[in-house]
Image (cartoon, rainbow, N blue to C red):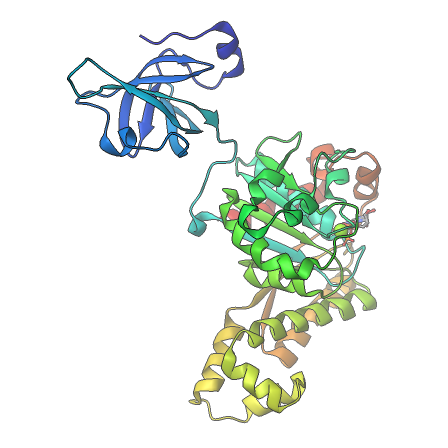
Length: 393
Ligand SMILES: Nc1ncnc2c1ncn2[C@@H]1O[C@H](COP(=O)(O)OP(=O)(O)O)[C@@H](O)[C@H]1O
Ligand SMILES: [Mg+2]
């Protein structure tokens, strides 16, 4: 049977390595030995060809399974060598192994939530950080991307005072070598990892936003929360465009409403511009957004351009977080955005949740701890819990 040193035991408390089996491509193999050098497995009937013929630097993924406890752990490794009796097909394989801390998920399982608002100081980061914490607490693997490049603060809100790395390291790499996974920072909350936007200026981040979008799918998270900076910069709109859940954080203030509407309008414009047909019309109306709507609305309903236009709009549903809302009158103010967006842009908005203005939230910032951690039973924490549950179901 397998053997394992005490230090190995201490560092791997979630699996009983004495009884562990290795699962690779749907097959289970007996583990003969595990040491810091690697794993030795026994393959009845011989080492499968796809494993035996693997290049020595080629990485592959496998799972170590503890059948008794039902626990599983993902690993990545390379083949060291195959062994067996002379003249016979090798039936043992030695493999290197490193744990995959964020399990890979298929794209369809990943939910990306982008948090925008147009205006600074409305609570985008507070919301993003606390949502991430709650989802992680519910057992979801969460990657929080602080996309407020150069002015990032999610790390501070999570209690990280010194950043070991930030997104600039990623942007510095040549396109072919970029791997967003290597920018993930551990936080003190299990299941939650952060990619920080850094506190130093990043030149022209917009040219990199597409590569960022492609890499989000590879992070292997259940949820990727993208906290966007203020304004309507191109890279923010690109990240927002590709998120399944498009959140707008709004406070009951006229300037917040103005900025939120302006962001929504830019996001819709960005979406419509992705269609070549609509781009042509936009050129004809000199990029005048109101005129574009006028032209399209006057087309017969069966017109293919009108159909495409409204199909794009149907795919855009904004979810509003009303923040610092304490009275019905203030809630009414939040509803104005819904009416404006419907009336002028023909796009649906709905309220995802409402948070009250609370000194505890304000204080949680200086305590460098998310308010849902500090005050888990408070009204706002309960509201955050409901929001997270709604996103999961
Ligand atoms: N619901 C709330 N109650 C009290 N203060 C809040 C609330 N939401 C946000 N704040 C305060 O607003 C500040 C700005 O929030 P932040 O999330 O950093 O805004 P943004 O990311 O939109 O720029 C926070 O530091 C906090 O003091
Ligand atoms: Mg912020």
